[in-house]
Image (cartoon, rainbow, N blue to C red):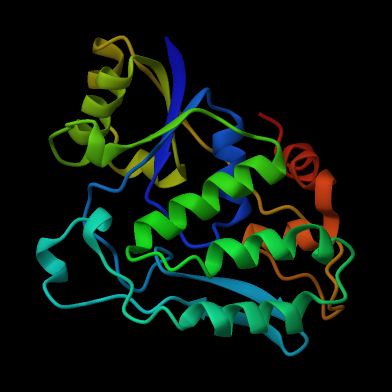
Length: 231
């Protein structure tokens, strides 16, 4: 029996996702639910000399209301060239930029057809670089069913989980009693974005993609997340 957590595949996720992964024994990419536009499934913020900037991957919208995340296509692969150029301009002087950028560029420019495939590869790579590698699987391959709390519960049962870590918003929908009746203990993440020195000295900006932390603090990144967010 294991501690499990899950989340929709995100583009260059923020530190909070990896804080949650680091507390778990296994991770599921929740790619079987509907894609949420105007959220972080295809975009995230970085820091530039002019302030925060949103990087957005264009995705297909035709028929999106009937498609799960795992079927949402990337509309224009040329986004990768633009994002790489922007990242190089924004972080070229960051202390650990050279340690990570070439590998990140290779993933971004690999020509993924689906946004979930890109996001999953990026997230697994970030897990490796942060030092929180966990066994993972895709919800779309698990044959899970239900909605809301029932969907999460079915995933936990199929994964053999004894504990499930919800995000903070899980309190809004999780049926705690039903989970416990199934022998699964629900936990709810408490997370405060870590504060650290950023290359652009404009006052600290929280909640950016975790690559901002990596480029600025390198191998110490996960320790910084944990130190400011004791389990």
